Length: 514
Length: 113
Image 1 (cartoon, rainbow over the protein chains, first blue to last red):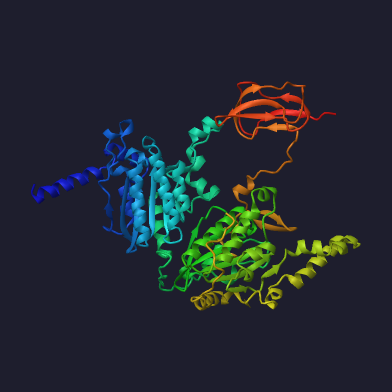
Image 2 (spheres, rainbow over the protein chains, first blue to last red):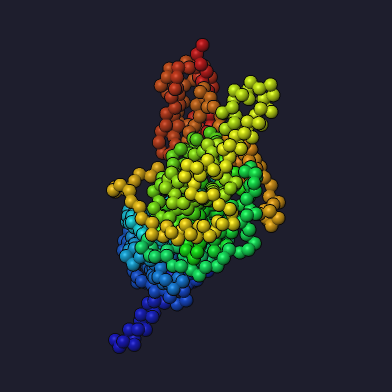
C-alpha cells in the first residue's frame, strides 16, 4: 500500500473514533445543554494547542457480549495542551460513548495522562462526565478507579489537580474529584453522589431528585465538595483559566511576578470597617482595598461563607487570603469554616503561596449541633494547618480577636511571621460583656443597681483590655498600624520574608486531625 | 464601606456570643440546624429505615434488659430490637410487614414501678 493510501486510512480511522458515540448520542448530549467532550477541551486550551493520545485504544472486555461492541476511544479523551501558553494535561470523559462508563482501558488512558502530568510537572485537568463503573467489566473497573485515586494522592501537593464535573459523577467515581485540589461545578449539569436517588428510594424510602441530592448548588453551598460554581459550561471554563492565572504550575515552580496595578480607588481601606465591633461589613471590600487591581478570586464563595478564602496578588505575587467574614454568622469559626480554611492553608503551603490572614471574629460558634458535629476536631484543623505551614504568613487584626479564635487565626504563637493590628483592634479572651460578667460577677450581683454596675464594669474592662496595646506590649503584635499604611506594610512584610527558611523535627509526616 | 456600600440594604439577624449581640446574616445551614432535644429513654426509635419482619413482644408484657421485642430488615440485614432496660412494653407502634423511615418510634416502654 502506498504511503498516500496509508495516510488516508489513518484519516479515516481518526474520523471514526472522533465521531464518539455517533451523531444521535452527540445530539442528545447537546440537547442536555452540554458541550461534547472535544468541544470542552477545545474551549479550554489555547488555540490549536491540543495533542491527543491513545485515540485507538480499545477495550478488552469479553463477557456480556462486550466483545462485539466497539467503544470509540473507550469513552475518554486524553492529551496535552497549553493554557496561558503553559502546558497542561487533560482527560475528558465522553458521555456519548457507553455513557462515559469507566472500564479498564478507559482508566488506563486516564492514569497514563496522570503519569505524564506528574512526571512533567504540569497541572492535571479532569473533565468528568460519566455514568460510573462499566458494570460489564466487573472488578477491572474497580481496579481502574483505585489506580486513579492512588495517582491523585501521589500528585497531591506536587501539581495542581482540577476536577470539572460536567455531567454525572457517581459512586466511587466521586472520590477522584474529592482527592483533587479544586472542583468546578455547573448549575443543572453537575451531579455528584455516592448513592443515587434510585438506591436511596429503594433502601431508605426517601424520595429526592438528583439535583436536590447532589446538584451543583448542593455541593457549593451545603457540602463544600465544590470550589467553583458556574451557571454555564462557558463560565466554568473561564473560571478554570482564571484560577490557572493565579496558581503556580507545580510545587517547584517559582512564582511569576505580574505587573503591579494599584487597588481601585473606590475601595477606601479606612472607611470599610465600622468602629462598633458588633456591626457587620463585607471583609471582601478590605481584601479588594489591599490586592493589586482589586482583583480577588474567591474560592468556595457560598459554603461556610463566614470564612472568606481566595487568591489575590500583592505586589505582583499570588497570595492566599484567609479572612473572617463578619457579614455572615458574625465571622465565627465553626466546623465548616475551620475545614475550609485549613485545607486552603495547606494548599497555599504546598505550592509556596504566602498567606495573608485578616482577623475579625468573636470566637467559636456556640451550640449543641456544633459540639456534636465535632467542632473540637474540626476546629483543630486550622491550628494544625497554620502551625505546619512554612510559607510567609502575615496576619492583620482588623477589629476583634477573641479567645481561641485569636490563637487559631494565624497568631504569633502559631508562628505567623508578622502580626499587625489596626488601632481599633481588640485582642482579649472574650468580648467585654462576657468578660465583665464573669470577672465582676460578685460586684455586679452585690451592687444596689446591678445593671448600672454591669455597664460600668463593661466600660472599665473595655478601656483597659479592648485594644491592641496589651498584646503589643508583650510582642505578640509586631506593629499597630493605621489602615492606610496597610498595603505598603504587607508588601514590605512579604518582601522581607521571601527567603524565609524554617525547619522542624524530622518526621515522616504529621497526623493532622482529619 | 460607608456610603458606597451596595450591601447596606441587606437585612440582618443577630447572634449571641459570650453575652454580646452581633448583627449579622445567617446561613441556610445555620437556620436549618436541628435544635437538640434530650432523648426520651422510653422510646425505641429506628436509627435506620426498615421493614418489620417479626414481633416477639406484646403490649403490657414485662421485659428484661436484652429481651428481643422485634426484628426488622434493613440494608439486607436482620436487625434485632432489644429492651435496653427492665421495663414493661407500653405500646408497639408497628406490625409485621410495615416499612418505616428513619426516626420512627417503634416501641414505647414504661418503667416498672
